[in-house]
Length: 81
Image 1 (cartoon, one colour):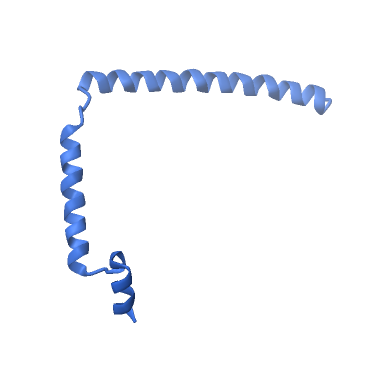
Image 2 (cartoon, rainbow, N blue to C red):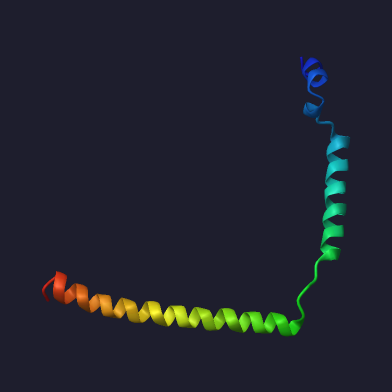
């Protein structure tokens, strides 16, 4: 039954050798693509890291202050404390 199906649909055939060829082809093509990548310099990585850390601190401070304000609003207005 598997032979009849594989004759009708050649893409259904999964032979171990075909899988090995596809894997090695995938790895080879991936390696070629990685060679084309323009990797950032150390200075660019440091600058990007600093930008992300500053953004996290700014957003964290905003959220903390916003939380403190709304905590008082909820406790006084909605809960009547």
